[in-house]
Length: 114
Image (tube, rainbow, N blue to C red; front, top):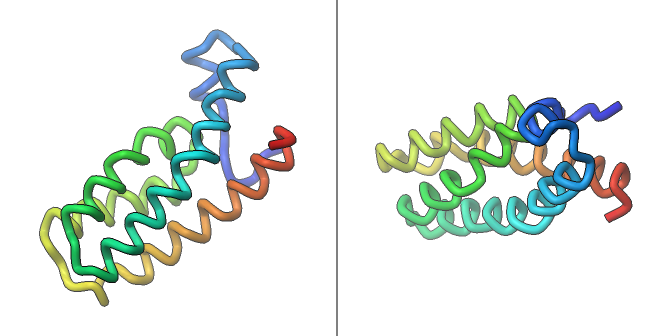
């Protein structure tokens, strides 16, 4: 039983296609960590545009994988970037996102032998 993600949306749109689910999970492992790094780098460089685009890119994947807490974090990050907020306002949210992604990554890799 997955603790950090939920594939019910994936199975619902794919008519319970296990291969499609594995493709989505693989996409998550390849793209989301890279974009989380882009968020972190953008934050360090005060590049709100980079943060926004990285957050926007992974938002659908987090939603599709049922990562509700990470999805809430990404919405907050997107909103912050659009408003060009101050770094200290969003640091804890980025830290939380990184933690959720890391936990899910570990679990997905174990569950799907990636």
